[in-house]
Length: 364
Ligand code: SF4
Image: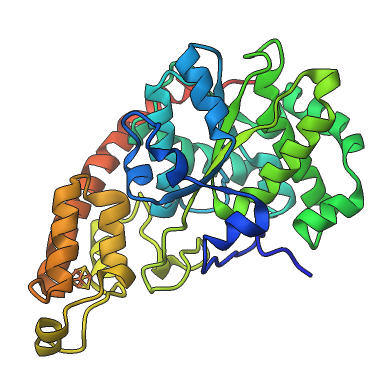
């Protein structure tokens, strides 16, 4: 049977709670209370699960070393669905966490069949520039292309002996040589901060969308098998829900109508927002009588995940929508005011970010 989670395809997860039983992911709410000033996405239960995060939090409490790895996939435009990871990175950076950020060039070349020139252009122009504009700081932050980081590639080669083809098939399902190589390079990405020349053995957290769990499981298995030789600890992870597509389906880079890119023109962004799937009723009369359905509304979701940082205001939107006091036209106008301000400011910051790439990107 094919696994439900495909890191290279489109995993559509209807019931996140099932992942607790099927894959052993732990509910995030069990540890939420022990986190000081949790990130907005944690408070709002968008980060829903974790593996071994206690070890990372414990290291932080004791003043011991810990680190974070978070890859970016340079295969298309960076949109609001990708932004969720960057928002979390800055929270971790504020805790003093060293950040390791691979640009997944080996995977983009091998699995997504991009040329290396295209990978480099997308990695810098579409991703790194956006990361910097969103507020990522250069201190304690290393960004690198996978094929240029020798320590990562060496670990990937060595670890090929620590896993069997049948195990890979059980974790990933359908495989190709390019997928096997890119999976092992990801293991190298996640474990290499524990080499002595970087942080040394320590807890490393990887914040991911739920579909990336196969990479986390493989890395944890390999780390355990290689621990006597390398001293590596299995990685920890946090898992966030997917941002729904604006059409109510899955947000997908191959479907521009489903997302708003961070470089979207104001005209296109406004058109997409105004035509987004909402939880509104067919008529104003019905909306007043029955109330709207913010729980299935993509405009509300955009506010919850990205645009409205004030919990009280967000709650008020939910309440007045459900009570039939708020109409979709007015609500979309408020959302557009927030989105327009964000895009104008972000796109101005992008211009300045271009001059700062060298502060982040290492050559090896
Ligand atoms: Fe969505 Fe706002 Fe309409 Fe409610 S009022 S369904 S939150 S757009």
